[in-house]
Length: 375
Length: 260
Image (cartoon, rainbow over the protein chains, first blue to last red):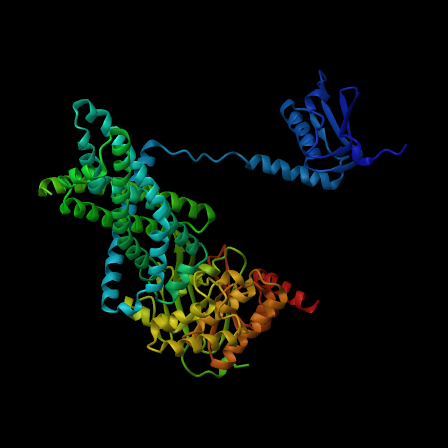
Protein backbone atom coordinates (compact mmCIF):
# COMPACT_ATOMS: atom_id res chain seq x y z
CA UNK A 1 0.00 0.00 0.00
CA UNK A 2 1.39 3.41 -0.97
CA UNK A 3 2.21 5.70 1.92
CA UNK A 4 0.85 9.22 1.70
CA UNK A 5 3.99 11.39 2.06
CA UNK A 6 1.87 14.10 3.73
CA UNK A 7 1.05 11.72 6.57
CA UNK A 8 4.69 11.01 7.50
CA UNK A 9 5.45 12.51 10.89
CA UNK A 10 8.62 14.39 11.68
CA UNK A 11 11.20 11.89 12.89
CA UNK A 12 14.66 12.19 14.38
CA UNK A 13 17.00 9.31 15.15
CA UNK A 14 20.33 9.42 16.98
CA UNK A 15 23.12 6.89 16.24
CA UNK A 16 26.08 6.93 18.61
CA UNK A 17 29.54 6.02 17.29
CA UNK A 18 32.20 6.45 19.94
CA UNK A 19 32.03 9.98 21.35
CA UNK A 20 30.14 11.15 18.22
CA UNK A 21 26.40 11.25 17.69
CA UNK A 22 24.83 11.27 14.26
CA UNK A 23 21.33 12.81 14.22
CA UNK A 24 19.25 11.98 11.16
CA UNK A 25 16.03 13.84 10.44
CA UNK A 26 13.25 12.47 8.25
CA UNK A 27 9.54 12.91 7.52
CA UNK A 28 7.47 16.07 7.22
CA UNK A 29 8.48 18.91 9.52
CA UNK A 30 5.68 21.40 9.87
CA UNK A 31 5.33 24.17 12.43
CA UNK A 32 1.64 23.36 12.94
CA UNK A 33 2.38 19.73 13.88
CA UNK A 34 4.32 18.12 16.73
CA UNK A 35 8.08 17.67 16.31
CA UNK A 36 10.62 15.54 18.21
CA UNK A 37 12.21 17.19 21.23
CA UNK A 38 16.00 17.44 21.35
CA UNK A 39 16.37 16.56 25.07
CA UNK A 40 14.27 13.39 24.64
CA UNK A 41 16.30 12.33 21.60
CA UNK A 42 19.55 12.95 23.46
CA UNK A 43 18.51 11.08 26.60
CA UNK A 44 21.46 10.45 28.90
CA UNK A 45 24.04 10.68 26.12
CA UNK A 46 26.73 13.32 26.32
CA UNK A 47 28.54 13.28 22.97
CA UNK A 48 31.62 15.40 22.22
CA UNK A 49 30.59 15.74 18.59
CA UNK A 50 27.13 16.02 16.99
CA UNK A 51 26.65 15.51 13.27
CA UNK A 52 23.35 16.78 11.85
CA UNK A 53 21.97 15.26 8.67
CA UNK A 54 18.64 15.15 6.84
CA UNK A 55 17.42 12.07 5.08
CA UNK A 56 14.13 11.64 3.22
CA UNK A 57 12.71 14.84 4.61
CA UNK A 58 9.49 15.66 2.78
CA UNK A 59 7.87 19.04 3.48
CA UNK A 60 9.72 21.15 5.96
CA UNK A 61 9.49 24.64 7.39
CA UNK A 62 10.64 26.58 10.46
CA UNK A 63 9.88 23.52 12.59
CA UNK A 64 12.99 21.77 11.21
CA UNK A 65 15.10 24.88 11.78
CA UNK A 66 13.93 25.15 15.39
CA UNK A 67 14.99 21.57 16.07
CA UNK A 68 18.40 22.05 14.45
CA UNK A 69 18.87 25.34 16.30
CA UNK A 70 18.02 23.63 19.60
CA UNK A 71 20.71 21.05 18.86
CA UNK A 72 23.19 23.76 17.92
CA UNK A 73 22.48 25.68 21.13
CA UNK A 74 22.99 22.52 23.20
CA UNK A 75 26.36 22.00 21.54
CA UNK A 76 27.30 25.59 22.25
CA UNK A 77 26.43 25.30 25.94
CA UNK A 78 28.10 21.92 26.48
CA UNK A 79 31.12 22.68 24.30
CA UNK A 80 30.38 19.82 21.90
CA UNK A 81 31.33 20.25 18.23
CA UNK A 82 28.29 20.71 15.99
CA UNK A 83 28.87 19.48 12.46
CA UNK A 84 26.33 20.93 10.02
CA UNK A 85 28.35 20.25 6.85
CA UNK A 86 26.00 17.46 5.80
CA UNK A 87 22.98 19.75 5.86
CA UNK A 88 21.83 21.28 2.56
CA UNK A 89 23.18 24.78 1.88
CA UNK A 90 19.66 26.28 2.02
CA UNK A 91 19.04 24.94 5.52
CA UNK A 92 22.44 26.12 6.74
CA UNK A 93 21.73 29.66 5.47
CA UNK A 94 18.35 29.74 7.19
CA UNK A 95 19.94 28.38 10.37
CA UNK A 96 22.46 31.24 10.34
CA UNK A 97 19.58 33.72 9.92
CA UNK A 98 17.70 32.13 12.81
CA UNK A 99 20.81 32.38 15.02
CA UNK A 100 21.16 36.06 14.10
CA UNK A 101 17.47 36.70 14.86
CA UNK A 102 17.90 34.94 18.22
CA UNK A 103 20.84 37.20 19.12
CA UNK A 104 18.93 40.39 18.28
CA UNK A 105 15.54 39.44 19.69
CA UNK A 106 16.34 40.55 23.22
CA UNK A 107 13.18 42.29 24.52
CA UNK A 108 13.55 46.05 24.59
CA UNK A 109 13.14 47.46 28.07
CA UNK A 110 10.45 50.13 27.83
CA UNK A 111 10.03 50.69 31.54
CA UNK A 112 10.60 54.22 32.83
CA UNK A 113 11.81 55.50 36.13
CA UNK A 114 9.22 57.13 38.38
CA UNK A 115 10.70 60.60 37.90
CA UNK A 116 10.72 60.21 34.11
CA UNK A 117 7.08 59.10 34.19
CA UNK A 118 6.10 62.11 36.34
CA UNK A 119 8.06 64.48 34.08
CA UNK A 120 6.48 63.11 30.92
CA UNK A 121 3.01 63.21 32.46
CA UNK A 122 3.56 66.86 33.46
CA UNK A 123 4.75 67.72 29.97
CA UNK A 124 1.68 65.98 28.51
CA UNK A 125 -0.66 67.87 30.84
CA UNK A 126 0.89 71.23 29.93
CA UNK A 127 0.79 70.41 26.22
CA UNK A 128 -2.83 69.26 26.56
CA UNK A 129 -3.86 72.44 28.38
CA UNK A 130 -2.10 74.54 25.73
CA UNK A 131 -3.88 72.65 22.95
CA UNK A 132 -7.27 73.12 24.61
CA UNK A 133 -6.60 76.87 25.06
CA UNK A 134 -5.41 77.14 21.45
CA UNK A 135 -8.46 75.28 20.18
CA UNK A 136 -10.92 77.37 22.19
CA UNK A 137 -9.16 80.54 21.00
CA UNK A 138 -9.36 79.35 17.40
CA UNK A 139 -13.10 78.66 17.84
CA UNK A 140 -13.64 82.18 19.17
CA UNK A 141 -11.68 83.76 16.29
CA UNK A 142 -13.54 81.65 13.71
CA UNK A 143 -16.85 82.68 15.30
CA UNK A 144 -15.89 86.34 14.97
CA UNK A 145 -14.94 85.78 11.31
CA UNK A 146 -18.24 84.05 10.63
CA UNK A 147 -20.26 86.79 12.31
CA UNK A 148 -18.60 89.18 9.83
CA UNK A 149 -19.39 86.95 6.85
CA UNK A 150 -22.26 84.61 7.80
CA UNK A 151 -22.55 83.45 4.17
CA UNK A 152 -19.57 81.16 4.75
CA UNK A 153 -21.22 79.30 7.61
CA UNK A 154 -22.18 75.72 6.73
CA UNK A 155 -25.86 76.05 7.59
CA UNK A 156 -26.77 72.79 5.87
CA UNK A 157 -24.23 70.84 7.92
CA UNK A 158 -25.43 72.60 11.06
CA UNK A 159 -29.07 71.63 10.39
CA UNK A 160 -28.06 68.02 9.72
CA UNK A 161 -26.13 67.92 12.99
CA UNK A 162 -29.12 69.46 14.80
CA UNK A 163 -31.27 66.67 13.51
CA UNK A 164 -28.69 64.05 14.49
CA UNK A 165 -27.94 65.33 17.98
CA UNK A 166 -31.39 66.76 18.68
CA UNK A 167 -34.36 65.07 17.06
CA UNK A 168 -32.69 61.65 16.85
CA UNK A 169 -31.80 61.78 20.55
CA UNK A 170 -35.39 62.38 21.71
CA UNK A 171 -36.26 58.72 22.44
CA UNK A 172 -33.18 57.95 24.54
CA UNK A 173 -33.25 61.30 26.38
CA UNK A 174 -36.97 60.82 27.01
CA UNK A 175 -36.55 57.31 28.40
CA UNK A 176 -33.63 58.28 30.65
CA UNK A 177 -35.49 61.34 31.96
CA UNK A 178 -38.70 59.47 32.81
CA UNK A 179 -36.67 56.87 34.68
CA UNK A 180 -34.71 59.54 36.54
CA UNK A 181 -38.00 61.19 37.56
CA UNK A 182 -39.32 57.81 38.74
CA UNK A 183 -36.12 57.10 40.69
CA UNK A 184 -36.13 60.52 42.34
CA UNK A 185 -39.76 60.13 43.38
CA UNK A 186 -39.24 56.64 44.80
CA UNK A 187 -36.11 57.69 46.70
CA UNK A 188 -37.81 60.82 48.06
CA UNK A 189 -40.89 58.86 49.08
CA UNK A 190 -38.83 56.64 51.43
CA UNK A 191 -37.96 59.64 53.63
CA UNK A 192 -40.89 62.00 53.11
CA UNK A 193 -43.59 59.41 53.86
CA UNK A 194 -42.19 58.89 57.36
CA UNK A 195 -42.91 62.54 58.17
CA UNK A 196 -46.21 62.76 56.32
CA UNK A 197 -44.66 65.07 53.76
CA UNK A 198 -45.73 63.03 50.71
CA UNK A 199 -46.78 66.10 48.78
CA UNK A 200 -43.22 67.47 48.86
CA UNK A 201 -42.28 64.75 46.38
CA UNK A 202 -43.47 67.28 43.79
CA UNK A 203 -40.97 69.88 45.03
CA UNK A 204 -38.14 67.36 45.15
CA UNK A 205 -38.72 66.00 41.66
CA UNK A 206 -39.53 69.38 40.09
CA UNK A 207 -36.60 71.28 41.54
CA UNK A 208 -34.08 68.47 41.00
CA UNK A 209 -35.08 67.98 37.39
CA UNK A 210 -35.28 71.65 36.43
CA UNK A 211 -32.14 72.90 38.17
CA UNK A 212 -29.88 69.90 37.85
CA UNK A 213 -30.89 66.49 36.59
CA UNK A 214 -32.53 67.52 33.31
CA UNK A 215 -29.40 69.25 32.03
CA UNK A 216 -26.94 66.77 33.55
CA UNK A 217 -28.65 63.60 32.32
CA UNK A 218 -29.17 65.04 28.83
CA UNK A 219 -25.50 66.00 28.76
CA UNK A 220 -24.44 62.51 29.87
CA UNK A 221 -26.51 60.94 27.10
CA UNK A 222 -25.21 63.39 24.50
CA UNK A 223 -21.60 63.03 25.63
CA UNK A 224 -21.81 59.31 24.90
CA UNK A 225 -23.93 59.64 21.80
CA UNK A 226 -22.92 62.85 20.05
CA UNK A 227 -19.52 63.72 21.54
CA UNK A 228 -18.14 60.30 20.67
CA UNK A 229 -19.67 60.53 17.18
CA UNK A 230 -18.03 63.92 16.58
CA UNK A 231 -14.64 62.56 17.65
CA UNK A 232 -15.00 59.45 15.51
CA UNK A 233 -16.13 61.40 12.44
CA UNK A 234 -13.37 64.00 12.68
CA UNK A 235 -10.77 61.36 13.58
CA UNK A 236 -11.74 59.34 10.53
CA UNK A 237 -11.60 62.45 8.35
CA UNK A 238 -8.12 63.12 9.66
CA UNK A 239 -7.02 59.56 8.90
CA UNK A 240 -8.38 59.95 5.34
CA UNK A 241 -6.47 63.24 4.88
CA UNK A 242 -9.78 65.12 4.47
CA UNK A 243 -8.69 67.64 7.11
CA UNK A 244 -5.35 68.11 5.29
CA UNK A 245 -7.28 68.72 2.09
CA UNK A 246 -9.18 71.53 3.85
CA UNK A 247 -5.96 73.03 5.20
CA UNK A 248 -4.28 73.05 1.78
CA UNK A 249 -7.28 74.92 0.44
CA UNK A 250 -6.89 77.46 3.23
CA UNK A 251 -10.24 76.51 4.78
CA UNK A 252 -9.82 76.29 8.57
CA UNK A 253 -11.11 72.95 9.86
CA UNK A 254 -12.55 74.76 12.89
CA UNK A 255 -14.70 76.98 10.70
CA UNK A 256 -15.78 74.20 8.36
CA UNK A 257 -16.26 71.30 10.73
CA UNK A 258 -16.29 72.45 14.34
CA UNK A 259 -18.51 75.54 14.41
CA UNK A 260 -21.55 73.93 12.74
CA UNK A 261 -21.36 71.13 15.30
CA UNK A 262 -20.89 73.49 18.23
CA UNK A 263 -23.84 75.63 17.21
CA UNK A 264 -25.98 72.54 16.69
CA UNK A 265 -25.24 71.29 20.20
CA UNK A 266 -25.49 74.77 21.72
CA UNK A 267 -29.00 75.13 20.30
CA UNK A 268 -30.28 71.60 20.79
CA UNK A 269 -28.98 71.00 24.31
CA UNK A 270 -31.30 73.49 26.07
CA UNK A 271 -34.25 72.26 24.02
CA UNK A 272 -33.47 68.67 24.92
CA UNK A 273 -32.97 69.68 28.56
CA UNK A 274 -36.44 71.30 28.60
CA UNK A 275 -37.88 68.11 27.14
CA UNK A 276 -35.97 66.07 29.73
CA UNK A 277 -37.33 68.30 32.52
CA UNK A 278 -40.90 67.74 31.34
CA UNK A 279 -40.53 63.96 31.06
CA UNK A 280 -38.67 63.69 34.37
CA UNK A 281 -41.48 65.57 36.11
CA UNK A 282 -43.99 63.30 34.37
CA UNK A 283 -42.13 60.26 35.72
CA UNK A 284 -42.27 61.71 39.24
CA UNK A 285 -45.95 62.57 38.84
CA UNK A 286 -46.80 59.00 37.79
CA UNK A 287 -45.03 57.56 40.86
CA UNK A 288 -46.65 60.16 43.13
CA UNK A 289 -50.07 59.25 41.81
CA UNK A 290 -49.54 55.49 41.74
CA UNK A 291 -47.59 55.06 44.97
CA UNK A 292 -48.66 57.95 47.16
CA UNK A 293 -52.11 58.68 45.65
CA UNK A 294 -51.24 62.33 45.11
CA UNK A 295 -53.54 63.74 42.41
CA UNK A 296 -51.67 65.15 39.37
CA UNK A 297 -53.25 68.58 39.87
CA UNK A 298 -52.03 68.72 43.50
CA UNK A 299 -48.57 67.60 42.38
CA UNK A 300 -48.49 70.34 39.75
CA UNK A 301 -49.71 73.09 42.06
CA UNK A 302 -47.25 72.10 44.79
CA UNK A 303 -44.38 72.00 42.33
CA UNK A 304 -45.17 75.51 41.09
CA UNK A 305 -44.82 76.84 44.64
CA UNK A 306 -41.10 76.18 44.52
CA UNK A 307 -40.07 75.99 40.86
CA UNK A 308 -39.94 79.38 39.16
CA UNK A 309 -38.43 80.87 36.02
CA UNK A 310 -35.03 81.44 37.64
CA UNK A 311 -34.71 77.69 38.23
CA UNK A 312 -35.54 76.97 34.62
CA UNK A 313 -33.04 79.62 33.49
CA UNK A 314 -30.39 78.08 35.74
CA UNK A 315 -30.94 74.70 34.10
CA UNK A 316 -30.85 76.22 30.62
CA UNK A 317 -27.56 78.06 31.29
CA UNK A 318 -26.06 74.77 32.42
CA UNK A 319 -27.47 72.96 29.37
CA UNK A 320 -25.93 75.43 26.90
CA UNK A 321 -22.58 75.24 28.70
CA UNK A 322 -22.64 71.44 28.80
CA UNK A 323 -23.56 71.35 25.11
CA UNK A 324 -20.60 73.53 24.19
CA UNK A 325 -18.29 71.44 26.39
CA UNK A 326 -19.43 68.20 24.72
CA UNK A 327 -19.02 69.72 21.26
CA UNK A 328 -15.60 71.17 22.02
CA UNK A 329 -14.33 67.94 23.63
CA UNK A 330 -15.62 65.78 20.77
CA UNK A 331 -14.20 67.99 18.02
CA UNK A 332 -10.88 68.60 19.79
CA UNK A 333 -10.25 64.91 20.41
CA UNK A 334 -11.27 64.12 16.83
CA UNK A 335 -8.83 66.65 15.40
CA UNK A 336 -6.09 65.35 17.71
CA UNK A 337 -6.69 61.70 16.75
CA UNK A 338 -3.84 59.59 15.42
CA UNK A 339 -4.15 58.55 11.79
CA UNK A 340 -5.24 54.96 12.48
CA UNK A 341 -8.31 52.91 13.36
CA UNK A 342 -7.08 52.54 16.95
CA UNK A 343 -6.47 56.31 17.08
CA UNK A 344 -10.08 56.99 16.11
CA UNK A 345 -11.30 54.62 18.83
CA UNK A 346 -9.11 56.30 21.44
CA UNK A 347 -10.34 59.72 20.30
CA UNK A 348 -13.98 58.69 20.80
CA UNK A 349 -13.25 57.34 24.29
CA UNK A 350 -11.21 60.38 25.21
CA UNK A 351 -13.96 62.71 23.96
CA UNK A 352 -16.51 61.14 26.31
CA UNK A 353 -14.16 61.14 29.31
CA UNK A 354 -13.04 64.74 28.70
CA UNK A 355 -16.62 65.94 28.23
CA UNK A 356 -17.89 64.25 31.40
CA UNK A 357 -14.95 65.51 33.46
CA UNK A 358 -15.25 69.12 32.27
CA UNK A 359 -19.01 68.95 32.66
CA UNK A 360 -18.80 67.91 36.32
CA UNK A 361 -16.21 70.63 36.96
CA UNK A 362 -18.49 73.21 35.30
CA UNK A 363 -21.47 71.96 37.30
CA UNK A 364 -19.55 72.39 40.56
CA UNK A 365 -18.51 75.91 39.54
CA UNK A 366 -22.15 76.71 38.69
CA UNK A 367 -23.29 75.42 42.08
CA UNK A 368 -20.89 77.77 43.89
CA UNK A 369 -21.65 80.67 41.53
CA UNK A 370 -25.45 80.39 41.75
CA UNK A 371 -25.26 80.05 45.50
CA UNK A 372 -23.15 83.21 45.71
CA UNK A 373 -25.55 85.05 43.41
CA UNK A 374 -28.53 83.76 45.38
CA UNK A 375 -30.17 82.33 42.26
CA UNK B 1 5.20 68.52 -24.73
CA UNK B 2 6.42 71.80 -23.25
CA UNK B 3 10.18 72.06 -23.12
CA UNK B 4 10.97 73.45 -19.67
CA UNK B 5 14.13 75.03 -20.97
CA UNK B 6 11.99 77.28 -23.18
CA UNK B 7 10.25 78.90 -20.19
CA UNK B 8 11.84 82.24 -19.54
CA UNK B 9 10.06 83.27 -16.33
CA UNK B 10 11.50 82.63 -12.88
CA UNK B 11 10.97 79.26 -11.22
CA UNK B 12 7.52 78.24 -10.04
CA UNK B 13 8.91 76.80 -6.84
CA UNK B 14 12.20 77.55 -5.10
CA UNK B 15 13.21 75.49 -2.10
CA UNK B 16 16.31 76.64 -0.24
CA UNK B 17 18.09 74.92 2.66
CA UNK B 18 14.89 73.31 3.90
CA UNK B 19 15.02 71.16 7.05
CA UNK B 20 12.02 68.85 7.37
CA UNK B 21 10.81 66.77 10.27
CA UNK B 22 8.02 66.20 12.73
CA UNK B 23 7.58 65.22 16.40
CA UNK B 24 11.19 66.23 17.06
CA UNK B 25 12.52 63.86 14.36
CA UNK B 26 14.69 65.22 11.55
CA UNK B 27 13.79 63.56 8.25
CA UNK B 28 15.51 65.78 5.67
CA UNK B 29 18.30 68.34 6.02
CA UNK B 30 19.36 71.23 3.84
CA UNK B 31 17.14 70.41 0.87
CA UNK B 32 17.41 72.84 -2.05
CA UNK B 33 15.94 72.64 -5.54
CA UNK B 34 13.79 74.64 -7.90
CA UNK B 35 10.96 73.72 -10.24
CA UNK B 36 10.52 75.60 -13.51
CA UNK B 37 7.16 76.90 -14.66
CA UNK B 38 5.20 74.38 -16.70
CA UNK B 39 7.48 71.54 -15.68
CA UNK B 40 6.45 68.04 -14.59
CA UNK B 41 8.78 67.52 -11.67
CA UNK B 42 9.05 64.28 -9.69
CA UNK B 43 10.30 63.80 -6.15
CA UNK B 44 11.45 60.19 -6.10
CA UNK B 45 13.17 57.77 -3.76
CA UNK B 46 12.68 54.56 -1.84
CA UNK B 47 10.06 54.01 0.87
CA UNK B 48 10.65 56.05 4.02
CA UNK B 49 13.11 58.49 2.43
CA UNK B 50 10.90 61.50 3.21
CA UNK B 51 9.15 62.19 -0.12
CA UNK B 52 5.71 62.73 1.37
CA UNK B 53 7.21 64.59 4.35
CA UNK B 54 8.89 67.02 1.94
CA UNK B 55 5.61 67.48 0.08
CA UNK B 56 3.71 68.19 3.31
CA UNK B 57 6.31 70.84 4.16
CA UNK B 58 6.01 72.38 0.71
CA UNK B 59 2.23 72.79 0.94
CA UNK B 60 2.31 74.06 4.53
CA UNK B 61 0.86 71.05 6.34
CA UNK B 62 4.10 70.88 8.36
CA UNK B 63 6.29 73.81 9.30
CA UNK B 64 9.97 73.49 8.40
CA UNK B 65 12.52 73.99 11.17
CA UNK B 66 14.75 75.94 8.76
CA UNK B 67 14.86 77.09 5.15
CA UNK B 68 12.47 78.76 2.76
CA UNK B 69 9.89 77.79 0.16
CA UNK B 70 8.92 80.31 -2.52
CA UNK B 71 5.99 79.99 -4.88
CA UNK B 72 6.17 82.12 -8.04
CA UNK B 73 8.83 84.27 -6.41
CA UNK B 74 6.93 84.90 -3.17
CA UNK B 75 8.04 83.38 0.13
CA UNK B 76 5.49 80.94 1.52
CA UNK B 77 7.34 80.04 4.70
CA UNK B 78 7.83 83.67 5.79
CA UNK B 79 4.34 84.83 4.75
CA UNK B 80 1.76 86.12 7.22
CA UNK B 81 -1.38 84.02 7.79
CA UNK B 82 -3.43 86.25 5.47
CA UNK B 83 -0.79 86.16 2.69
CA UNK B 84 -0.45 82.40 3.08
CA UNK B 85 -4.20 81.97 2.65
CA UNK B 86 -3.99 83.99 -0.54
CA UNK B 87 -1.07 81.90 -1.78
CA UNK B 88 -2.92 78.65 -1.11
CA UNK B 89 -5.19 79.59 -4.01
CA UNK B 90 -2.23 79.33 -6.37
CA UNK B 91 -1.81 75.62 -5.84
CA UNK B 92 -3.93 72.51 -5.63
CA UNK B 93 -3.13 69.14 -4.18
CA UNK B 94 -4.18 65.60 -4.95
CA UNK B 95 -3.79 63.40 -1.89
CA UNK B 96 -2.85 59.74 -1.98
CA UNK B 97 -6.38 58.43 -1.39
CA UNK B 98 -8.13 61.37 -3.03
CA UNK B 99 -9.15 62.77 0.40
CA UNK B 100 -12.59 63.66 -0.86
CA UNK B 101 -14.99 64.96 1.78
CA UNK B 102 -17.16 61.93 2.29
CA UNK B 103 -20.30 63.80 3.33
CA UNK B 104 -20.36 65.77 0.07
CA UNK B 105 -21.12 64.65 -3.49
CA UNK B 106 -18.40 64.91 -6.14
CA UNK B 107 -19.97 68.13 -7.44
CA UNK B 108 -20.05 69.62 -3.93
CA UNK B 109 -16.43 68.55 -3.37
CA UNK B 110 -15.28 70.44 -6.46
CA UNK B 111 -17.58 73.38 -5.73
CA UNK B 112 -16.34 73.98 -2.19
CA UNK B 113 -13.07 75.80 -3.08
CA UNK B 114 -15.06 77.95 -5.52
CA UNK B 115 -17.64 78.79 -2.84
CA UNK B 116 -14.84 79.66 -0.47
CA UNK B 117 -12.72 81.84 -2.72
CA UNK B 118 -15.01 83.31 -5.38
CA UNK B 119 -18.12 85.44 -5.53
CA UNK B 120 -19.57 83.44 -8.40
CA UNK B 121 -23.26 82.64 -8.38
CA UNK B 122 -24.48 79.23 -7.26
CA UNK B 123 -25.34 78.33 -10.85
CA UNK B 124 -21.90 79.30 -12.18
CA UNK B 125 -20.19 77.29 -9.46
CA UNK B 126 -22.32 74.25 -10.32
CA UNK B 127 -21.41 74.61 -13.99
CA UNK B 128 -17.70 74.92 -13.30
CA UNK B 129 -17.79 71.88 -10.99
CA UNK B 130 -19.56 69.85 -13.69
CA UNK B 131 -17.01 71.00 -16.28
CA UNK B 132 -14.02 70.09 -14.08
CA UNK B 133 -15.47 66.65 -13.41
CA UNK B 134 -16.06 66.15 -17.13
CA UNK B 135 -12.43 67.16 -17.84
CA UNK B 136 -11.21 64.28 -15.66
CA UNK B 137 -13.68 61.85 -17.25
CA UNK B 138 -16.27 61.86 -14.49
CA UNK B 139 -19.17 63.36 -16.44
CA UNK B 140 -22.40 61.81 -15.16
CA UNK B 141 -20.98 61.07 -11.72
CA UNK B 142 -21.54 64.56 -10.29
CA UNK B 143 -24.11 63.49 -7.72
CA UNK B 144 -22.30 60.37 -6.53
CA UNK B 145 -20.79 60.28 -3.06
CA UNK B 146 -17.12 59.28 -2.68
CA UNK B 147 -18.10 55.96 -1.10
CA UNK B 148 -19.98 55.02 -4.29
CA UNK B 149 -17.04 55.26 -6.71
CA UNK B 150 -13.79 53.32 -7.30
CA UNK B 151 -10.28 54.25 -6.11
CA UNK B 152 -9.23 55.50 -9.54
CA UNK B 153 -12.38 57.63 -9.83
CA UNK B 154 -11.73 59.08 -6.38
CA UNK B 155 -8.29 60.19 -7.53
CA UNK B 156 -9.71 61.76 -10.65
CA UNK B 157 -12.37 63.53 -8.59
CA UNK B 158 -9.60 64.68 -6.24
CA UNK B 159 -7.76 66.06 -9.27
CA UNK B 160 -10.90 67.87 -10.44
CA UNK B 161 -11.13 69.47 -6.98
CA UNK B 162 -7.44 70.37 -7.04
CA UNK B 163 -8.00 72.06 -10.41
CA UNK B 164 -11.16 73.89 -9.30
CA UNK B 165 -9.43 77.24 -8.83
CA UNK B 166 -7.22 76.77 -11.94
CA UNK B 167 -4.06 76.76 -9.84
CA UNK B 168 -0.62 77.51 -11.26
CA UNK B 169 0.90 74.55 -9.42
CA UNK B 170 -0.58 71.13 -8.64
CA UNK B 171 0.99 68.70 -6.20
CA UNK B 172 0.37 64.96 -6.44
CA UNK B 173 1.09 62.60 -3.56
CA UNK B 174 1.69 59.09 -4.92
CA UNK B 175 -0.98 59.34 -7.66
CA UNK B 176 -0.44 55.72 -8.79
CA UNK B 177 -0.68 54.18 -5.32
CA UNK B 178 -3.31 51.46 -5.20
CA UNK B 179 -4.19 51.74 -8.90
CA UNK B 180 -3.90 49.08 -11.58
CA UNK B 181 -1.36 49.80 -14.36
CA UNK B 182 -4.01 50.84 -16.92
CA UNK B 183 -5.73 53.30 -14.56
CA UNK B 184 -2.35 54.54 -13.43
CA UNK B 185 -1.33 55.21 -17.04
CA UNK B 186 -4.59 57.05 -17.68
CA UNK B 187 -3.90 59.25 -14.67
CA UNK B 188 -0.42 59.97 -16.07
CA UNK B 189 -2.03 61.02 -19.36
CA UNK B 190 -4.38 63.25 -17.43
CA UNK B 191 -1.45 64.90 -15.64
CA UNK B 192 0.25 65.63 -18.98
CA UNK B 193 -3.03 66.90 -20.40
CA UNK B 194 -3.43 69.33 -17.47
CA UNK B 195 0.04 70.70 -18.12
CA UNK B 196 -0.54 70.94 -21.88
CA UNK B 197 -3.91 72.66 -21.52
CA UNK B 198 -3.18 75.13 -18.75
CA UNK B 199 0.63 75.30 -18.54
CA UNK B 200 0.30 74.13 -14.96
CA UNK B 201 3.45 73.28 -13.02
CA UNK B 202 3.17 69.74 -11.72
CA UNK B 203 5.04 68.30 -8.74
CA UNK B 204 4.61 64.57 -8.21
CA UNK B 205 5.80 62.44 -5.31
CA UNK B 206 6.16 58.90 -6.54
CA UNK B 207 8.31 55.82 -6.77
CA UNK B 208 6.37 54.49 -9.73
CA UNK B 209 9.18 54.02 -12.26
CA UNK B 210 6.90 53.66 -15.27
CA UNK B 211 5.40 57.10 -14.56
CA UNK B 212 8.79 58.64 -13.86
CA UNK B 213 10.21 57.63 -17.26
CA UNK B 214 6.97 58.35 -19.08
CA UNK B 215 6.05 61.87 -17.96
CA UNK B 216 8.74 63.41 -15.73
CA UNK B 217 10.76 66.31 -17.14
CA UNK B 218 13.10 66.33 -14.18
CA UNK B 219 13.42 64.52 -10.86
CA UNK B 220 15.11 64.92 -7.54
CA UNK B 221 15.98 61.72 -5.74
CA UNK B 222 15.94 61.59 -1.95
CA UNK B 223 17.81 59.12 0.19
CA UNK B 224 16.98 58.02 3.71
CA UNK B 225 20.55 57.57 4.95
CA UNK B 226 21.69 60.83 3.36
CA UNK B 227 18.59 62.70 4.69
CA UNK B 228 18.53 64.78 1.55
CA UNK B 229 18.84 64.95 -2.23
CA UNK B 230 21.34 62.61 -3.85
CA UNK B 231 20.52 63.29 -7.50
CA UNK B 232 18.75 65.84 -9.68
CA UNK B 233 18.16 65.84 -13.42
CA UNK B 234 16.31 64.15 -16.25
CA UNK B 235 15.40 60.56 -15.27
CA UNK B 236 16.90 58.91 -18.36
CA UNK B 237 20.14 60.90 -18.01
CA UNK B 238 20.42 59.89 -14.37
CA UNK B 239 19.75 56.24 -15.19
CA UNK B 240 22.57 56.26 -17.75
CA UNK B 241 25.10 58.76 -16.44
CA UNK B 242 24.81 58.79 -12.66
CA UNK B 243 27.85 57.48 -10.84
CA UNK B 244 25.88 56.96 -7.65
CA UNK B 245 24.95 53.26 -7.39
CA UNK B 246 21.87 54.14 -5.30
CA UNK B 247 20.51 56.20 -8.18
CA UNK B 248 21.34 53.76 -10.95
CA UNK B 249 20.04 50.79 -8.97
CA UNK B 250 16.72 52.59 -8.44
CA UNK B 251 16.28 53.96 -11.96
CA UNK B 252 17.78 51.20 -14.11
CA UNK B 253 15.33 48.69 -12.72
CA UNK B 254 12.63 50.94 -14.13
CA UNK B 255 14.37 51.10 -17.47
CA UNK B 256 14.60 47.31 -17.56
CA UNK B 257 10.95 46.99 -16.65
CA UNK B 258 10.04 49.33 -19.44
CA UNK B 259 12.08 47.42 -22.02
CA UNK B 260 10.60 44.00 -21.14
